[in-house]
Length: 160
Ligand SMILES: [Zn+2]
Ligand SMILES: [Zn+2]
Ligand SMILES: [Zn+2]
Image (cartoon, rainbow, N blue to C red; front, side, top):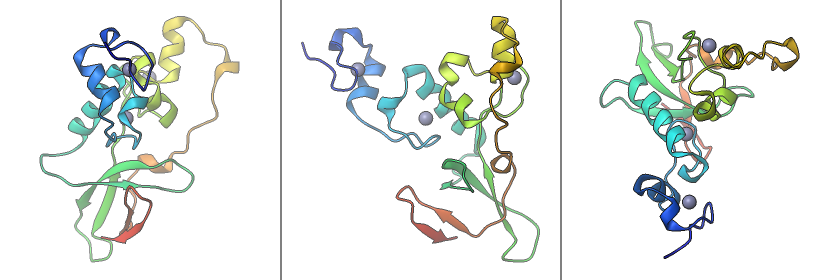
């Protein structure tokens, strides 16, 4: 019998997968947080987003844009003269209900929101008061950005 150093529950309160998430800390490629900050469901959803977002063998780079948090992007070669021939296309989750891209808050709570955006979730639970609206999410990270720099997980800038 042992207790978990992450959630302080007994090992028996975990299934195999959750125990692994809590004991072997991995960094989530999607949100750059450690696995212990994810529920089992959220971890699966974030991994799935990555899996769906990239082609096989494609390299991913964490990028930080403006005031947005670090997100992960794939590199796409486009038909233009260097240095404008590469584009970072951020990988994000889409609302399971309306298909709009999710904001970072919605991605962080995707397990509780069931992969829905706040708008759809509020409709589902019958909470439609405008008071609950969050400030509009920054749009820039959802579109491809032309840059030849990327930031690694330690925050260092590199040339591509
Ligand atoms: Zn635990
Ligand atoms: Zn994650
Ligand atoms: Zn939605």
